[in-house]
Image 1 (cartoon, one colour):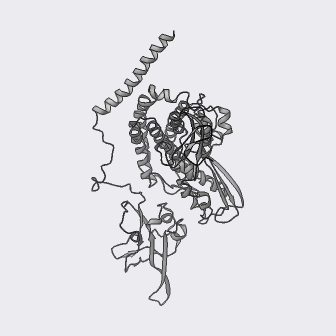
Image 2: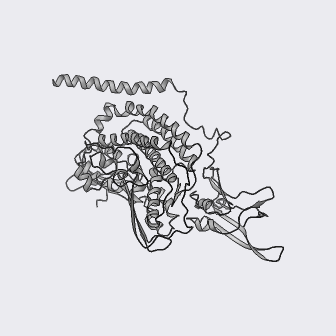
Image 3: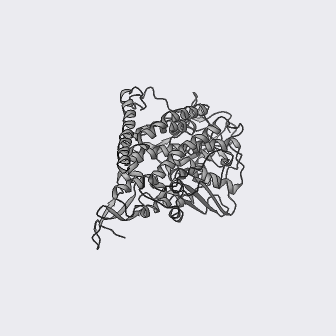
Length: 371
Length: 158
């Protein structure tokens, strides 16, 4: 480990990017070895926002630990809660009412769009375009208002409980979501006009940060990062949960493997999410929104693993139960950590300015990496 | 052939910039659409969503009566130790001892607004309020006693 700023014995310059740097989107510390302006090595240093969520969960009951997972990947907090709830339900073998399943998927996809919107704005801002950030937040605000009305919070919702949902949806929910869909379709063209088609943006993205499919698999990349390299890894398609297998949607794949391919995967994925929402919004089944469960949940002795597709990739939840009211051990396989490990491989040999584009398309959320 | 492609690229690049600038120009000339909240100037007209989780409160009726039985379900449901219930024994007119709350202490600084206590409450004694301006000058002001002084339990709530 190289500690100080300075030069190595070969005469290469070592610089620190972060932990307080606007391009790292959080407290990520990168130690970069430079030869001139060419990157020789990138060494991510983690642990600045480690809160030991896995250890904390061991002292919380199966109802309580779900809310903590909102604080891991806070941009897809609803999907994190969904994954944890699926794992508890798998252990208890609870049958979730169809109404709750549909609403969960609807909110999952809304969260995914909101996350990608924020990524798109921040991505453009990293590359020097400031206005797209406000355009992205205009659409994201509409989703946040839906969340605030139905779940009671804008970011860390904690709306899902084992067995279903905490409350029924707000009466305005369907109307508001339809309004959002029409707003989205009106405004999504601007994204292509402002950023995607822009020549400066394309020249900075195309051919930058190439990741081959083999490397994507060997680094454990998932989500849009791996799908940009042509690796099929959508958990919603491969291991469907809560009724994703009954829906018509495509797994978005690009084969170029560069930053622009990863960018296009996310842009197209938002359209697929809109497609899923349109299929479900008019056909929310009637019935209970939560199944009857015991007040104190006790998972049987054993090991349980579920996985969900968050906005960043595959989130795995592994619970070891000793039969008590609290988990014996919890392990989260977070998508951000694996995606970050590919950064060193991608950045070697490219220029320092291009590294911002690579990091932007990895869509890093630092609390998700550190937990 | 190379020259032809080169000139084509240049005009394509200029076109892409013009397309973006046209959108920028549209918003420059059509700036009537205000999408930002004018907070705090709109504090009088600001309406929060009815389910917004601001803080835990205990509603009292006009006779200064609440619905809390002191069953500590909320205390057990809370993941952070936010709620502490101190109970006492009341003497009923028949001369029997009856458990009732003395104080329901609520630590706002520990609360994460997860709503688990509200769901756990069997008698709907506590609800979430829509207040969100929680700044105070001293940390001790965050520790609140939710039941009002002199309040007692409502008739018929077990």
